[in-house]
Amino acid sequence: MTSTPDRTAQDPWPPLSAGLSNTHPALRYCWHPVARSADVADRPLRVLLLGEPWVLARLGPTGEVRAFADRCPHRQAPLSIGSVVMRPAWAATAPPEPALRCAYHGWCFGVDGRCVDIPALGVSTPAPGAPALAPGAPASAAASTAHIPPRATLRAAHRVAERHGMVFVCPTAPPPGLDDEAAATFDALQALPDIDEAGDPSFMPGDLPVMRANASAGLLADNFLDMAHFPFVHAATFGAEDPVVPAMHVERDATDPSRRWSFTATSEHPFSNREDPGVAQGIRALVQRRRVTYRVHAPFHLVLRLDFLDSGGSNVIGFFLQPETEDRCRIFSTIWRDDLGHDPGRMASAVDFEVKVIEEDLGIQEAYDVRALPLDPTVEVHTRADRTTLELRRMLSDVVAAVHAATVPARQHPGGAT
Ligand code: FES
Ligand SMILES: [Fe+2]
Image (cartoon, rainbow, N blue to C red; front, side, top):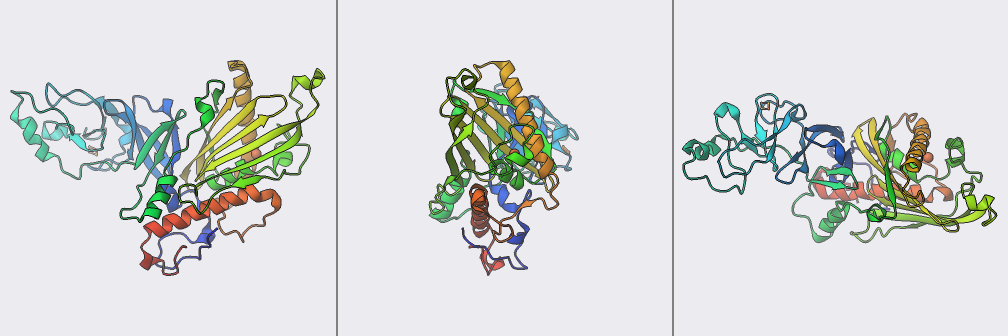
């Protein structure tokens, strides 16, 4: 890990010693889940991300989800209390398409965030690329473009994507003029990972209800990767008889700009498979082999896959965190199972079980006074059993250093984040 000295007084970023809070500026350049796809329907939806309100709406001819700062440029009313309307026809030949209408004075905004209608001025304007005005259209329709102030444009998120039933937002674009290596670094950071099992028909998906926690997203990610707490926090659910954490093989190539922002941690170890009916039937021994694989992408996109190597079957848990405010975040979790016979009842039980497990974790996480993941490795004490969670700190510390170096002018950090 690169060491990052604490920053100077002129540097607007928080010092390294403050850790990774839910609103840390480096997180603006990363992907975050903000909603279930199904929750973005025919009305605008307000979400909070990194302390800032955003409005989500399905706009444009295909109803793609767009994200804008939740503030109308006219008189700053929240757009999320507005509506999605079919765009007022400006010409007979223009196809209708959904637009976001402000509740206050009715301004309408199109898929690219540009204002397309100011009712108080009388007429609307063509969408970009719209066909030419039909012969005989009122001259005022063409003339009206001039009346839309250029600044009547919403601030759009850099990227929005729907993946695995969730809407992800990456709020901020990389700064212009990056050298090749820095550009590759941002490309990799802003590549939203796929989950292979989600597209595999042998796996059945089960969404947990979205949960809200008064907690740090960084510490929740840390907790998801931590195995040493199982016997103490999860005694009432899955527990673990053996408190010893198996040796984890952690793989991350911190020197390759395209691979710096992900890592895997794996282990194959014996465990007591009490849920295997084959044990009671005498077909298999109680102690069986299990493979544990964590897949992590910065900042808080985490997947755990458990493969039961003797009894068969795989259990995949996705854990995705939305840092809402300094003190609060939401947890999106989906499980994918290939061992439930596609039975909805068994999946519902599995989902309930995972909710209980997360509630047990929140008993610890919501008790923290300081809601930030430490990035300075000397702040905490690490052991061999913390290998995976130490890598999380290293990777996120590298994210902070890389984004800082690319976005904060050098004169503001003469000591430099290296
Ligand atoms: S505040 Fe939105 S239209 Fe006036
Ligand atoms: Fe846990």
